Image (cartoon, rainbow, N blue to C red; front, top):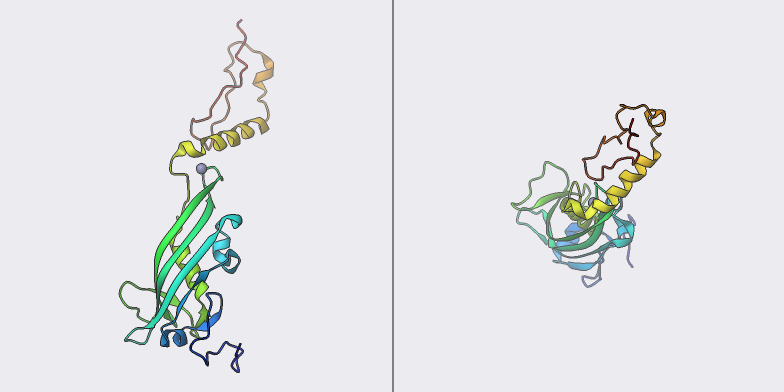
Length: 207
Ligand SMILES: [Zn+2]
């Protein structure tokens, strides 16, 4: 490997292979129209890793760099990922399939214009990892509020959670008095819809 005075990878040889995880100068790759493909481990995507299940992530991408007439570096290609996110209703995992076309323009700051249909990717000094662009693209593709499409899919777990909640509650005083005419105690339904509601199984004794 060849490094320049700043410790960055230099590319004296146009054929030197570059990976998605390498720190690169985007304009150098654009100059030579580089195509970079491969897999990206979740451990290289810290922001994504906070959102998805760690053991079920498969991320790959195939990207091509070029330079627009304006001089800005364009990166485009395909990104695909098999991920899983916790359902916001029942916390069980939901498989998430991402298959998207990446079209990013590498800019130094937010004021720089980008070509139509491209989203800006800010790299202040023009240096970074293509894996960072892949992570950015996947983050844009994830559902903001992942839930099972059909509420019945998470019904069983949600019901178990509800049941565990009931069992933790202290038994209301009225249950032990046996007073005729007292309303039968009922479980609280706070926070959940009627689904899973059940009686305590202790109806008032007849007078
Ligand atoms: Zn669910």
